Image 1 (cartoon, helix red, strand yellow):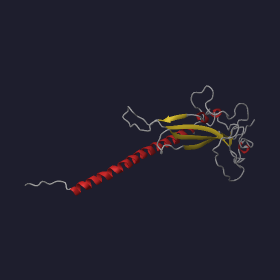
Image 2: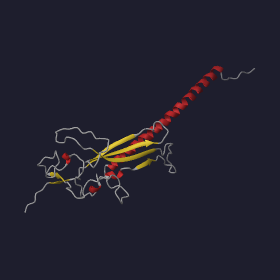
Image 3: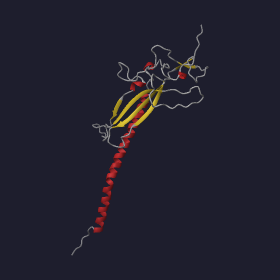
Image 4: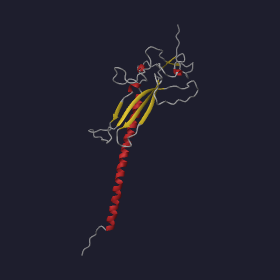
Length: 232
């Protein structure tokens, strides 16, 4: 009788146990991989929102100073009076003998716009608050170009809101604290427009079901010119 080598029963049991352990861990590995992908999408969305905020900040503060050659400090209706012209084109904190002065609009129709959003007849933004109310879906899909199709390719939304916030503080003090409000100014206009870009998702994934808000602000600074005298 010729004997052939075979798998012993104990070896077979060990193999079955190891396969069972591997199969038990598989769902957790898949869940971890899926979670990692969703976190990656979330981080990409945050980066996109941050870039969008920075892009908005490159625009003029208001429609009435969107002309690059003419950007004065605009008149506002409900701002802190200490930010107005304190005489000779200077705000509080600018030394009386300074050679540079701010340029202020004194009246007429050159006021900070109280209506936020695109002005009548505009189809694209040309100042900061024109982005108010704009929404878009972030699309993570490059199908047809050899790229990767994500499972969550159209579930992340980005909404932008612009609002006037209170600019009140004790500017006459040598040092003072100012905390940017997150609620809109009750009425009128101020010297600060707050930008809020909000990320939401319609995904069923817990990782993506978070509301993330990025905030920034633009100020009614205008431009300055050198003080001069006219001799006759």
